[in-house]
Length: 213
Image (cartoon, rainbow, N blue to C red; front, side, top):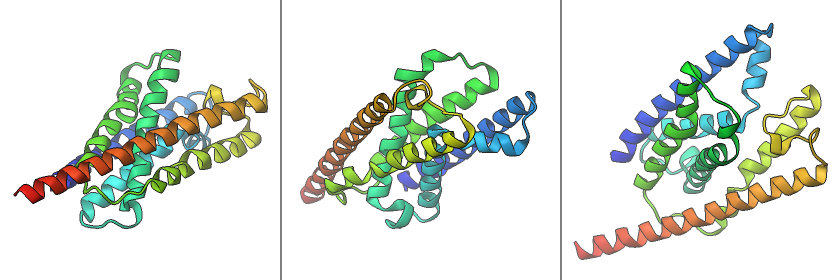
């Protein structure tokens, strides 16, 4: 029940943060002459937005069907979600936060998608049942950033916009870009292995507690 409550709260926060960010990008790009369709196209280029949407849907389904461990709530999908959203938080704070200074509503949206949603989802994941993950689940997690890299690079070939400086082939060689993606992917998978280890430790702790009672 605690996980369900956190999931419900997290889903509401996630939807609100995503909606606010969408409003801001439509407003800001509209002021520069862009249409709502063009702003929507730009909105869905960001790994942060796509990952926040992903984890918000995971939490919404968990709040609706708390006993389900299939589909979006399969253990390895929830693992991929928690690693992805904490990756968003880490990369933003280490590589991107110093590059701009959001104010007002943008600051609220920024904190929502980069700080609050990651924290709430991490708490949700910790409260979920544990022990259902294999070490291969960590490799499964690599699908999300790998798919995004392909998606972002293909998009960029059409409109010339790359959301992240470390994935911009117009600012570096393709070899350097490949190294950047490989390095980030390695960090991502390493994080996934850590969380599989946490899953196993929590399962052992739960089993020990059940045996003592």
